[in-house]
View 1 (cartoon, protein in one colour):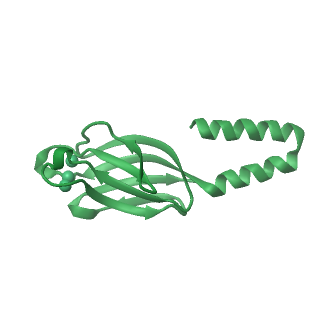
View 2 (spheres, rainbow, N blue to C red):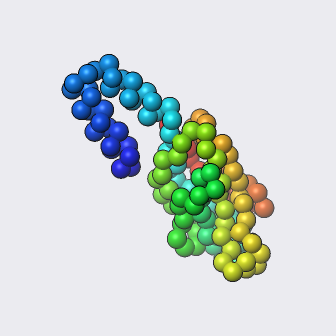
Length: 131
Ligand SMILES: [Ca+2]
Ligand SMILES: [Ca+2]
Ligand SMILES: [Ca+2]
């Protein structure tokens, strides 16, 4: 959100000075990033072990964690901007390898926008990717 506001502030400054440049800046911002909105856990991977502990990596770097258990159904605000062309992976963390290592619920390349379904290991998550 901060990044979005910063782009808006820069665009506003450019619009006052050079309208043509402002239009270009807006187009570039829209084309090079997407916004991850809400993660919804429809079905957990952990099943009888309680809620899942989802986290998200972007090009292998952890960028977001639920910070606790998410039962099904439940939703959490992710609200991070990710570069077009990067790879998003959504995992369920299994602390201490219990009952086994972290589970990849799904991954996708960042391109367009819409609702992404992530359904590995019998889990069912959705993540909305915004323009
Ligand atoms: Ca698990
Ligand atoms: Ca877990
Ligand atoms: Ca596991």
